Image: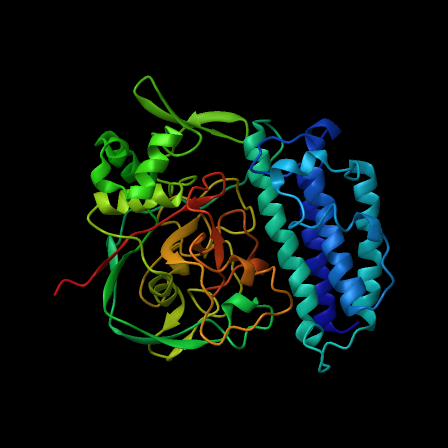
Length: 430
């Protein structure tokens, strides 16, 4: 096995270790549905194995299906999350045996496959990148489920660097065109392609994500009770939901507290706010006299290198994420303090644009000009339209293998259980 295949094998092992760590719990916790927004954990566990079987073993390897009778159970489009507990899912022990059997055959396919051949699914190991990123995304979903479960002691903690106060509130991005998306990153999804030139007027964007202290000021100023700051749809959501703070926040004794993976603790005011929906982010931005950045503004501020005239894979350049540049890969089970990663700044000086929290943008999830489906329309195409808002950057729970400056996430504007935050922007004053 050559060096590239060895790296793929290492990534496969690492993501599976992560999935197993998040499902190392009592069977009752794994089979129970902790929220209608989420699947039972055991469904996610078997689903990642079934996805691997479909794409690596059947599509890439031409292997006879191992368990075709479970395909419909683990097809994410067949049954909504809220109804999955009614399915005849594999139990925890059987799910572990199934995904182990699939993985052994996957490594055999990896050993035999030609990664330099003409087949798009094989070339540059795309099919393996597909399943590795898919599993990491489900691992992040598992973490959201574990947060909703309210059970303590299931999610590991870790240490993060301290924050800092130095630096401007905003950074300036001059007018001009940049290349959005990619045509070169081998594991990029179809919705990130093709690269295309976008021309933008000048704008300012927050150097850092909006923090808990700033968001608490919005709450204290009556932000949730003033319809001036909310869109019509947002105000309707606010009234119907009864929300008056980020999800998992509560005010007691004059102080804000949050529940995080089964533990109640004071809200750390120097962290980026998380667990806010798009409507909340939009309302805060209006209150602050700003707006949410468009997806193009976000990507230019994050990844464009104006001196080199090209896009960077990460805000700081091409080097892989390191502990001094970004809070990725579950280094700790929460965002890092604001200003913790000056070494991770973009060419324009924006910081913490990858890791910590997914950042809402003003944009709907739409195809780029020249978009082509690959390898299946249900990954991206069926979601295009005016139902989903784009999120960028990746959270503390996202793995570096599934994060880059061009990566696009999307969700309904009402979603709060995911690890979401935001930063603001404003147009240049004329």
